Image 1 (cartoon, rainbow over the protein chains, first blue to last red):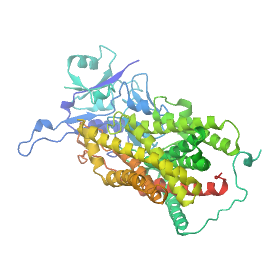
Image 2 (cartoon, rainbow over the protein chains, first blue to last red; image 1 turned 135 degrees about the vertical axis):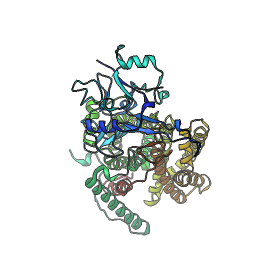
Image 3 (spheres, helix red, strand yellow; image 1 turned 180 degrees about the vertical axis):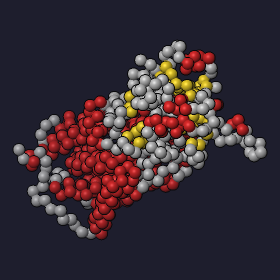
Image 4 (cartoon, helix red, strand yellow; image 1 turned 30 degrees about the vertical axis):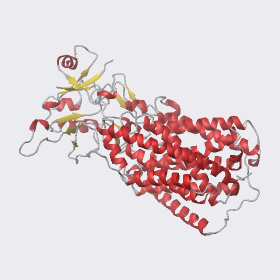
Length: 187
Length: 384
């Protein structure tokens, strides 16, 4: 069994949104600004014109962090949210009661309501599509023109992601909450 | 086996009532509220959750607040009544049966709101039983509430018909009532991602306001139903209310100081926004705490008329306290590293206004509750 994670070389992101489009296409996500499994956040430019700090305008591609200690999983009353054998945090839509407690508990705003099933949906590293077909990349990684995303097995010391995490400095979002995310932002 | 063997049914059931200005006004308001409830429910069945104004950033809305309000009423009523049985408090004895029934009906009214908040209530019952998650506060709520209801019913039957170990049932009713309210508070308190509610504040606040809600409701019933034999108990409970309201004031003050000066921007923003809103200042603080505290402390020590008005204000305040906690935990958006996603306006505060459907179900449930209390009053013999 693997323990999948993702490294994001976020400074390479050009905000083309190809990853969001690929995700929606691959996983059949509904259109609409609030229906997204992954997104690119933008920080505002700092300073006043004409003295703008161009470097401060950064793009942060993000999604479910697939936490090792996922708060969404802890609060789900019916165990609809679970961690599968590959360390991917997933939602069993048959068990989801749409109490929205997981949406409240998620510190990363990674969950939303799928209007077709009226259950909570989120990124599952393409577990039901590409990974299920035996492919080794996610749709967002596969399409990224600047190679921001790197998906792989964190437990495999020879995997590319393990190599990158060994050699480059990185940080996780809201690590103080003790969620142990498996998304790593490379600096 | 007859129903009369277990329930104190009245011999002559009549749904007529004495018509005066107050009762007619209550009847008219109840009809309007029930019509509002039916409007909300029909809208829900036509449009589902899309009839609600909840969003990705603000997934819990008015119905959660409404449910928490009814839970407070239920806990306050039942704990007061069951304490009267278990601790053998004579002055509470005349109102035990009525309080137990009102508590149960309050729980039922709460469920009429909550069932529409949860997307799949049938699935909830099935999978909470089949694959419940012990780390979830919501799961434990699903465990404690049935036990709470069961022991309240057993206490009522046992006390009314003098069968079975009444005091044991009452003790378990008290235990599960407290467990339920503490768990309801933990739903908010256990969210470590939401700095506004994370911690023990809301568990304690829920328990204190629940007991206050019971006292307020009892005072209103005493005046409306003109129950002279309840007055002694209400006057005693008024003193308890003074202590609890004072405690709440201190808790609110401490929360403000630690929230604003605690050095956590997300928490400070939320507390500042909350404490300067009319929902908090006028309703939760003014109507819910200061006015009832002032009346209880400086009002008449022999009559309950003015405290009844303060009690109505107090219940409005408690309702707003539930709205404020539901809104408060969602005020700070979670994507803190980003200020814009999909070109949406940068914001430090998430806003939410309940839809008419949510208001219809949430406020209309009060009409359902009053109707149920009226029916129970006509069908059951609730006075000793």
